[in-house]
Image 1 (cartoon, rainbow, N blue to C red):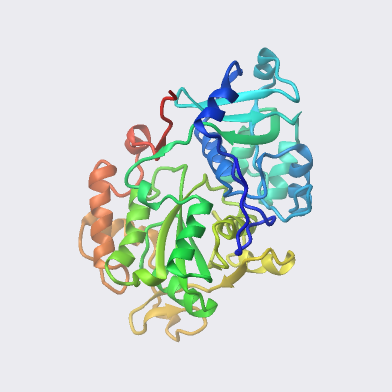
Image 2: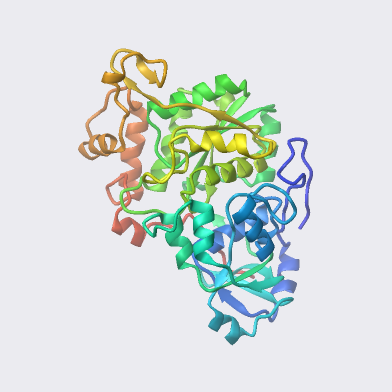
Length: 412
């Protein structure tokens, strides 16, 4: 359960790591009340323990939640923009007899996962929280809906991982803890890395977004950090996202010396500019020095201005990772890659819409190489056949039968 320092400073100055050894784990969990948790909470336990969310050591106390909601700051003063909450119904807490100072064993897939040291049990106004974080209380917003679904009590306190999950194929080769990611950067000789946040399979506009940010930042390399998490019908399946992103390098559109693909386990909140800040802090913890932000970063519907994520970094203190704002890349039949405010053929621009891409994938017809690379297209079809029941997009069947991203092993 050590903490480490790094020359590419994590948020708060120290990289959190709270992972028990097998002997420590066996000693810690004996006799503890067991509390099964849902997938979101299990994933957040994993990320907290490995330091993705440094300087947080666990789920937030009321002072942290209040500071984040009102001022985008933790009680310690560090900038933070999205709450990390562990909720339980008051009746369950009463049945367990949980009080401050207790320890709970959190289980997932019927196996021990993590120990929570309960520092505080509290309530919080969910309507106020939704308004502050998302700028709306409209239940049509997925983040607001998630907030309204929380139970009526929250538990704050540090989390220790006692049974590290096993990441399943094809995700296993793309999962790096912050410590391991920093080691990889050092092994590659990368001192400046620009992060690219993605939750989609890449088309050529995404490729040029990465290339332009690499030029603009003067970085040694690009880290594709693909968000793998909760899905809804019509999204790309997670396997298509990560394998499509990796294919850009494998097919030679990026040299291995300047490109790396990884996953971030996270259920998107779609908090627009606030989530942009959160993404920057997580990628700072991974060791990145820059983060690119394009059009409508982490947005949903019409809740945020398309470039709100650009402006928020002018409104907060320097958080130690440099934002690289970019405008929209699209397909122009005359220019090829077209860029907002540069291309003079706006009346002919093709934004390479998700509807169009879904259509060509469904038809299985090779698309224009100027819109999506042939190799990426092929791997999207293959991922759909292997993992998606014949489709590269999420269906009800995929949600019901998909292979888990990670499994929790039985403890000895």
